[in-house]
Length: 314
Image (cartoon, rainbow, N blue to C red; front, side, top):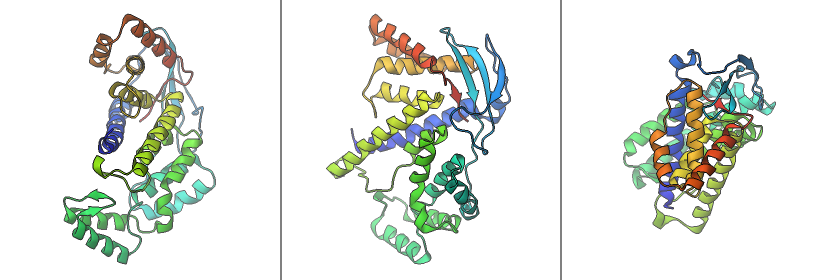
């Protein structure tokens, strides 16, 4: 695959999916709406996989899906993401993260990501700006508007004051620690926050090493999004459906794509939300044999039968 297309799809696709998940699951006007379903028993419980002081208990509702599988809808509270200026937030989060607070590790990783490529001192800032104007490139990518890039760099330089330059590149270490501890948000976000490196912007510029790096990132994304799907994440179901339908990151597989979208539509319906994938499911059905469709329906049942199904992330 064209590496530029790969990188754009991985980043843009994830962001679209997460924004869409926020729209359907996390909007303030929806958060207070009672979920209607044929069978329900509403209660709360601490998240089964990770309990942190920074996250309130999940609201849980037991419902029956359209295919007859009993699922437990869980609406997770939103983990607060640090906002600039980042120096004071870093001073609070770093000791908690070192002490093993999983939510603090996740939030610290996100904070450091915002400062990852910001020069550490005024001299380095001036040198970076001068180089950007001279080459119209920064970090291996073309810069169409050097003046706009300078403005953004100066703003981010001020926002990251107080964050030690030596720590700014460790964002993935902290995100990985949180993900490896089972924090669902970190499992979803780690693949979005790529490591710093020499990426190829165009296919003709790619070296074998760059292609190998991008293939490794594909495998990592499948691993961590797979963990999130196993943990019941509706967003991860959506992502896998997209990967399988488009043949990006994973080989095209109509059965898996159908099952992912069908399971997610049943989760939407059980949560009292609008179903989203009727057209996609109809198209996939038209391309499958009856035996394939039977397999897809069985796979849908398997996904819905996941004991952690299903977590609706904000």
